[in-house]
Length: 345
Image (cartoon, rainbow, N blue to C red; front, top):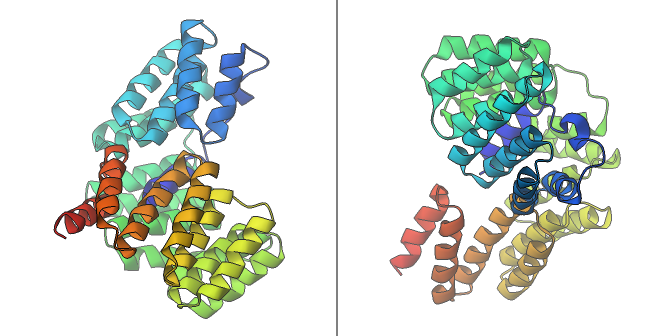
């Protein structure tokens, strides 16, 4: 789940996510679909773009939007088909490069490595950026072409020396259980000089992955002081791992008070409740979180809902909830194991 988010985030570094800002004023369905896509409401966006296609409003851009919605919803076949239709309808270089970037991700996630590589090679014709080289590096790892992967990752960090890129490469190696290779890039990232709160936040994450929790906390506290709200989420995670739910709760509450993502704040509070054995409180926070959640936050909340019912010893409800969960997220291996465990009880 998290790895896919990282992959999409990395690709977005070089992709024109808001290509043409979804255009000037158009028909309401198209405007609403653009807004829904930006808010992570992918099912709503899908319906709006499909309606706009019927009305023949900016059809290639609608097909692009449909493809992104399917990609985020995990239907990679539909996403690829939509991106192919979009590419046929608009030949501007900027549009072609943008859509090919998303298409490469959909092909990668569906296991079509050769097709994904071909899309990346096509992107090179329009000018390869860091995200393209990063993507080729990921494909290389999956094809066990380790020297080629490293060469492309090195090209990526030549073009983009951000902390985020070094972290994404680390995560890519992590998917292949090549932790030492990934940590070499984290060490290179720590040689950068931090400036903004975002820099300190990323350094905190790097120290966390390297197992240096004191320095991780120091950097994350600096990030929080500089107004980087997500740092409090990470601090909450660390405090929970240190079995300090009271400090974690304070972080999640401060995050919410500062206007952070409500769903993630409620999810963190639910985890604090479970750590303290308050499973009804956890379920109440999960319910509140689901009311504020976009598509990308729903999955973790629903999974934690299953766990809360299990800890509450309401196994009948837990079994029902995990069945519903797997209908929505069938590829989640952790959930598959949880389902097998619950069915054995």
